[in-house]
Length: 255
Ligand code: PEP
Image (cartoon, rainbow, N blue to C red; front, side, top):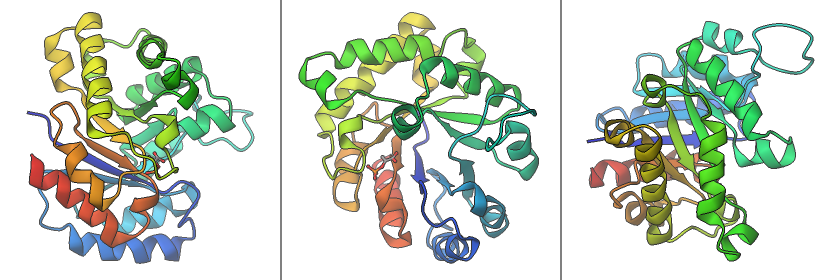
């Protein structure tokens, strides 16, 4: 039995510490009795410290949205995993499609980031997903298999179970178009079969796979009710405490 995990990816929003604090104070009291769902929020770097102090002693964890794959050095504008770890960050989103598409992150770069995150005992949330054209050309599974092979290259079995995969079809992110629960389940179950082939049933059964792409309070329950979907990574609907809370409640209700 996998514990569902719901994450809020704030992207480049609520980065002024007072905005993040306001949002998290509301959320903190709303979710205080939720035990059966893991919850995290990923604010911009500028609000991480305030976010951490507000959710301390609550059941909300704080994730970073990205990081670099070196500890120190001449990498102007980048954030080291060591800095994040030192702040108390436990989760980090890696390879989000906006990072891949806008900032040219490749599977190889994401793979290096995963390895350094694991070496510092942080849990990577690794995003994979196909473009609309690839789906329309019937290449979704091929794309997913390629990303799985390269993104998780040389990852050991004991590390794979610490990783959370987020299947995020790119055509569904921020577009208001959601994959149907059946479309999402088909790919989640495919991802699990790839984990069986590469590792074994034990690993495949343990790895949590979130769905991401225009999750809203009114579609969350149908998506989370699918057997291979272990919660969601939520963008737009995580910016407002009430809608994010309703999505978390849907995950709680199902499992
Ligand atoms: C995301 O940013 O990971 C995401 C899924 O965004 P949205 O929910 O807005 O589609």
